[in-house]
Amino acid sequence: MFDNRKRYLKRGDTMLKSTVPYLFFNGQCKDALAFYSKVLNGEIKDTMTYGEANESVADDPNRIIHAQLEVDGNLFMLSDIPKDDDTMLQDRNVYICFRI
Image (cartoon, rainbow, N blue to C red; front, side, top):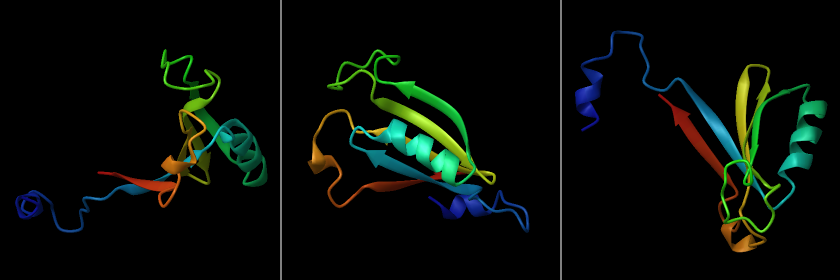
């Protein structure tokens, strides 16, 4: 499957454009955004709460469902887990998304 993609690439092209770390929090995403944007001199590009997204799965509609923070041209995505459930964070609190 992936071997077929190689024939469409020109010499020097790459399939992977960048990697985007995706950080999850248990209700502290808003605070983390404020802290990291200040400490790392970053810019908050986007935020949306569970309430704004009309998602009822969260205990608190003010939890962040999606946020983007740009630091020196690098993008970080952040989110709160829907409920106070630490099992979602066990063994997997950082996800990496690849932009192709």
